[in-house]
Image (cartoon, rainbow, N blue to C red):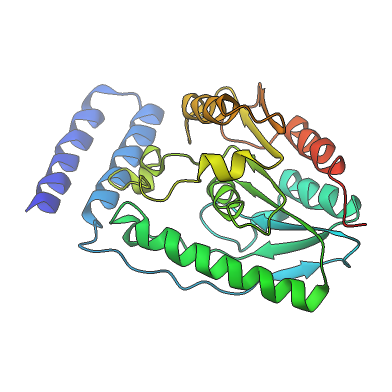
Length: 264
């Protein structure tokens, strides 16, 4: 009944917008409302545990530093092929690091029907086993997690693992309900543990005008980490357009990551 009501309400709102807004604004607003309706209509009854895959690929040899790279939405295919994101991959590799490109399960609302508790447990167990497998295959190294948006959220989750030495999150999702796709969901029970990641070198970069994940939420998240007295955490904001990855952001991550020492 709730789903039917939400869909019906969407139809009414869409018709109302068609009557009062100019064409371009009408299309954008209508698209936004339909995304919300689709999200509400897809509300699951109970959580579904994700199935994680192995790395999409491993780039480079192990010279003592390794970075696990997490992609954003909607998925991995073609994600790193845009010039700005490819620049990030190149910068990490040029630093002499082995880059492990991680493939996350395609995001589904059903993962977060319980606030993400089952998802967090499954991700933690998978990443721990995955890290052991990579280390056995390629040898010991200083290990870091880096991700963008939804991947930034996962980079912070993965940084809770004791084997991870540091992390960098680019415009990370801190509250899934801010995203249209997850408007009726919550990751309230699947959040990066501030004490565990705050004890490690960390970096958060984001745009001041990011409405996709909410720059206000990122300011608050950075404040919580800094409030713990961690001297090895840094937050940097940029005058970037929207949710995009600017050259300045890439340069900041490159500079921060280059300061991290490899296993000697």
